Image 1 (cartoon, rainbow, N blue to C red):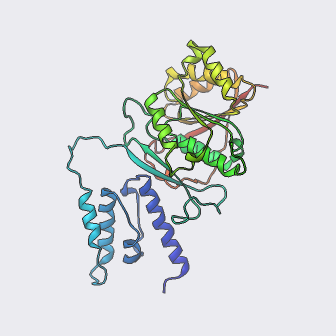
Image 2 (cartoon, helix red, strand yellow):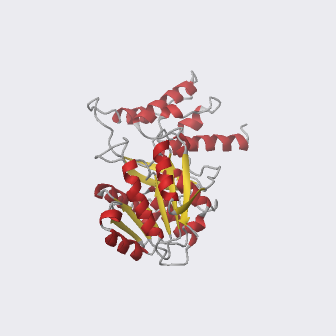
Image 3 (tube, rainbow, N blue to C red):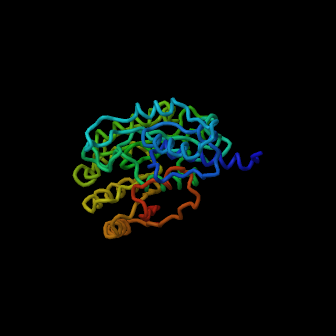
Length: 342
C-alpha cells in the first residue's frame, strides 16, 4: 500500500508539471519520477500538442506490457487534433500563460479545486522576444523578482497608491491589485494603481490582461491606464509633472526598464520629477543585468541626485514557473530602492 506521504509527494510533483504546463514551460525541462504509477500519471495529464506528445511518451513507458494499463483513446484523438498544418517558418501565435504563485497567507485560495495554497495570474503574451516591434508583449525575469519582493513586503503596496513605469503585459499590476484586494477587504475603494507604457498596443494588452475575469485584478475598481513617454520628462516637463502630481502615487515600480542606454537619461529624469512630488517616497526598480555598462550608467545617473540601495531578494520563490523560465536564464537580477537624499 502506498503511504500518504508518497501520495502527497506524487500529487505535488504532478501539480508542478501542471503549473509548468500552464506557464508554457518547454516539456524538455519537465520530469516525472519513474516510480510513479501509470494510473496516477494517466489520470492527471492535460493539454497542448508538444506537452501531449511528451505526456503520451511518458505514459507509454509507464504502461509496460500490463494489459490493465491501457491509455485512453481520447488522449490520442486529442493529440492528433493539435497537430497543425502550418508553414514551418511561421512564428508562434500569442498564447495565454498562467503563472501560479503562493500568497503570503497560505490559507487563502482563489481556486480550491486546483490547489489551496496558490493564486494564479493569466496573461495573453507573445511567444517571441520581439513582437509588433516591441519587447513589451511578454513578461521578463525582473518582473518575477520584483513581484516576489512585493509579496514578501506586502506593506509597500497594500495600502498605497502605486505608479508603474513600463507596465508591459500587466503582470506586476495584477500582483499589486491582488495584494491590495487581499489586505484591504473592508474597503470598497482600494488605493489607486496607475499603469503606464509608451506603446499603445502594449498598454491595450495590459488593460485586457488586467480585466480577464480569471484574474483577481478584474475586481479592482481603481486602476487607471495611461500612455507615458519618458522623453516627455525632457521635452514636455510641465505635462508630465501635472500627471505625476495628479496620480498622488506613494510608490513607483518598474521592472526591466533599464535595457537601452539611450533611455537612461529620460528614465532618470522621469524618476526625478516623480520623486520630487510630496507623497512619492520611494521607487523600486527591478533590473536584469544584460549589459554591465548600461546598468553602471543608470546607477551613476541615479546616484547623482538620489540614494540607491540594492535590496536583498527573498530566498523562496513564490512563483512556481519562474525557476523554469528560459528567458534571461542565468542573468543576474537586482532590485534597487531609490529615495530622495536626506
